[in-house]
Length: 115
Image (cartoon, rainbow, N blue to C red; front, side, top):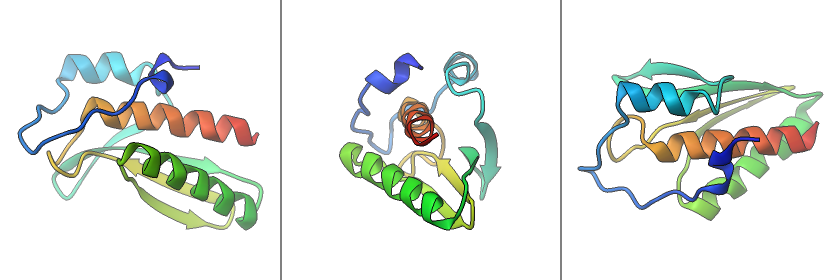
């Protein structure tokens, strides 16, 4: 399990720095199943999770929602039958922050717990 799951998100202001290319490479090793994408000009982390049915996908979505509320950091979530797509990015800075990698690692841990 990633060491990132033990870290907490830090409060982030609009002038907080985005992660650098070197930081992305290092942090990305802890969340290898996540893709870095660009959507509407903002870098984001995205992963599609496969689940058995709608009920399990909904339960996973709720787990991710609970994690988001605990940290005050919220993703975009698309719930479908047997599939949940999660995207993390820091809205205030319009891109990626270490918080996004922390939350991606926690999302992975929540998924593993459901398997």
